[in-house]
Image 1 (cartoon, each protein chain N blue to C red):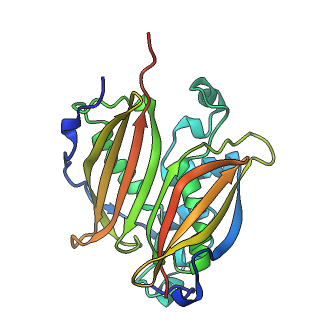
Image 2 (cartoon, rainbow over the protein chains, first blue to last red):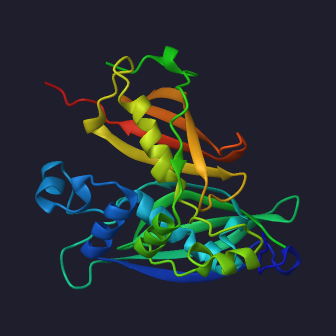
Length: 142
Length: 150
């Protein structure tokens, strides 16, 4: 494991580079195939609306996968992530149009821990709604 | 009917090994749009000290979710899966999953609670490699919404 970032160069409050991840219906179909999660709420809008959703929604695990990229792109080695947890607070609604939806992810160092580890808190929003809560990663820095 | 709290602590038999393929890792990384070469290029992975390509952090869910089927479909537990939503998810890693791993999952019921009429079930999946060493622990919290009245 070899992180690009040294523990000594970060402070509580250090911001990681934020990213925006686009999500279209095609993205969801592809993720369904790769993950094996074929729940129709992620690709069939008549099914999604019949169970009370506003439209097709992204897989929560897709959003979780995108959010951690802010950390793994920053640290370089994804093996440096030692703990990662999220709460799914609101769905990412994905309309069937040219643009789809976007997931905005920002993150900052929330605590410096022992053994050159830090806790990073993530904020993920879509359509101005917070889609992940209690979203935290513990990262081993060099 | 609420879930029976006496199921807390119940442990299920380990799953048959899941063999992690490098092309499955590539497919997953492409599906989440992640171009980090550590997922696709063994040399890039070795340069970071990994013996082979590693999988993205949420990849283990493919394996632990399938294993959790033992719990959510346990007829004795009686969870109504049609009312279930994924509440939260956590991974604690001993090391990253990598190509060639043969992984087994041992599921257990960590907690059962009732909140505002909803059943809240937390399932833990301990993932071990072929030599029995721990790789990652996944915790999945599922919420079964209360059945509608009438």
